[in-house]
Image (cartoon, rainbow, N blue to C red; front, side, top):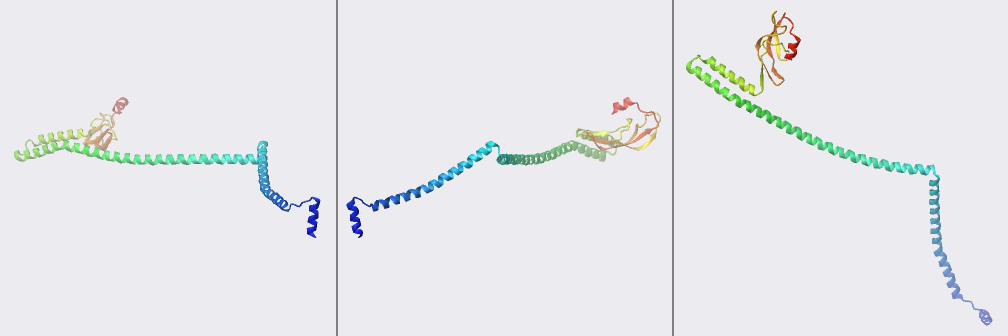
Length: 241
């Protein structure tokens, strides 16, 4: 019966393209499948563009939240940059401090060694100046042994003079303030002596001489000081000072 229907359709001029219909349906399905992700991607792009447009419009309109967030980001970036610069500067100053500290230690050590060398040279020079004095002492003692004590005093005085000259060359100064105004920085009063003719607080006698080098007093002189006399004129005191 089906065969008859087909024949009838053929006789009437109609054809049923079964294969073409199937192919067309498959192509339509494929196109629908291909167009579906493209549509989704287009929709995503449109949504993203809409969000960007909204953000742009909000920024242009001055949305407080977005402006505050942008300012916070800028401030955070600036703070990070400032912190990095501060850390680099601190590191640089630390390196400078360490170098200066090392240089100072080296300089101090060298100066200490130099002072020790200068002291040694000064002592050597003093010893060299005292060697002739020792020779004179030996000659004086030998002369006294051979010829008796006659002439011994003159020899001792000569040696004493030579010794004092050697010490003076080394920078030693003798403090012998007899007849001068009393100076408590260089002399020590061991006795007060009444004297109405001398000015008040004048050195009368020197029991023991003092010595100094430069401004440093190695040993103060032991003296007696007058009392009961007239006051010393201020002009004379200022000249002595």
